[in-house]
Image (cartoon, rainbow, N blue to C red; front, side):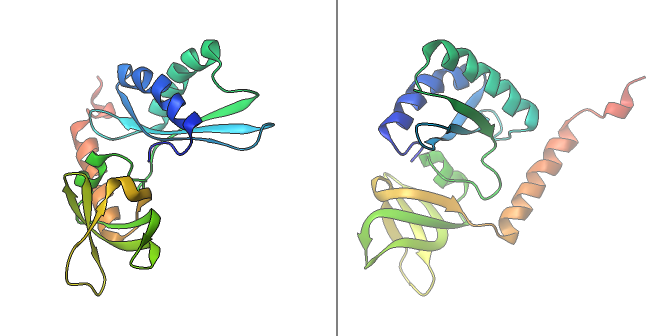
Length: 182
């Protein structure tokens, strides 16, 4: 789920160690566009706290460029775009499904299940190699193999916004005040 194509997966293999050495984790990587004008989109977060600010994006972009430029793994011209996963982020790694348990998600499968490929419900966690999702109108928690999931994303909700605000408030409270400098 972190990459869609074979080319994406090769780039993840090349760039993961660079990101990790810099203290970041690549959440998702996509190489988009045609042969003329391509865009390499890298969503990442700090490994230590899951945050990603503008300075982090610039720093990671420089780190990745130091490897991409000499290795030249992408044919033709491209633009590197490094960003935060955002509040309504994609869920791409098993730990994401644990971290965001209790929040509403949308998933798309690579096959039909109960006559459809798209589902929306409350994430009830990770059990082995399956996620649990509580679907509206269903009594039982649906278990979906991670291998079937093509796309998973958090749904923007009041609970998710509240979680984000609490994390930002805690981070700001932990940072030293810039006004305290004598």
